Image (cartoon, rainbow, N blue to C red; front, top):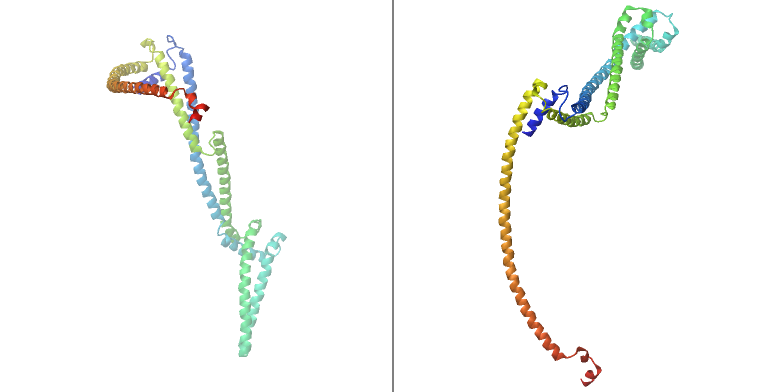
Length: 366
């Protein structure tokens, strides 16, 4: 009931922040100023708490977004060899058809020219050796076939080198203006997948930088809010602060409501009149319950006191009985002491002076 009364009066106080202007025996302006200060603190704490929550959610989204961007950038850079190989193959064909090119491009294709020349030489040698097979004796044919096998193995090895060089040339060519300068349709078409990936990768890298900047900004904001390491813990602390401040504000509003209880009703906001009427009913109920509570408490105390009275009476009775026994014991001890005193006196007379017992003369007689 008291909690209910407190809540009703706090509600009434929230409607009394502007009027009435005066109240007997109370400085309403000072009470209202304290309420405004606490309300501002509550708003500041609410803003900080809510902002930390928003930042936490955004940081989680940024983390997921960063992972997605990184995965996409990796995907865009993967399995590029087929694209580079097609570009390098077509570019080399174009280069071979246009020997008058810049030295920069000649350097890119020089290794390819050399390996391609080797491959042509190997092909010619294989053809020459195969042409000799028909007119040679069996043993010579065996030797020739051995040479052909060696040449074919060498061709496989050099072909692998050629393909690697073609991919490397394709990669290097895309770092130059060769494709645009030559303007070959097939080569331009082969370069499109690379350019599309490059464009997308650069866009995603830009997105990555933007997201990283946002993450840095959010972490700086968390630091200013004192929530860098454990944001959830800081929010819990702010919730506790908010509860304390809200209780303080409610107490001030109750104080404000109580301060205007003597103000005429027509000077109060309409909402407060019904709240005060409700508060009056609750107070009356509390008074009634207090009377009942006091009587119940008194009844409990009577019961306890009656129990204590009985306990003390029994204790007194036991002590009195013990006192009678002690008196008898004392009387017996006194009689025993009197008899002992008489015997002591008799024995002292029989002994005589104590100092004479140890005298030399008495010892000599013995």
